[in-house]
Image (cartoon, rainbow, N blue to C red):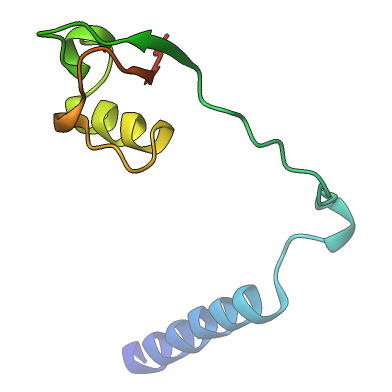
Length: 99
């Protein structure tokens, strides 16, 4: 008798799992409908243009607002073909601004 109860319970649980996964229990008409937006806003990163003085570094100009890796990555994205460790005094560069 215990085996029969166990087998019936297992079959019932498997049926419940099958029904829930294949057919589902949430009516489709109750699900929210989201429309895809045709436009995606591309936001230009905030920056300031600074003329570098002798002894300045990217970190000394930007400050400690973000992580050093993010600051270097953002600086190099704003200034293509310029490495963060190779800035020259007297040249103006775009530096990221963090809130």
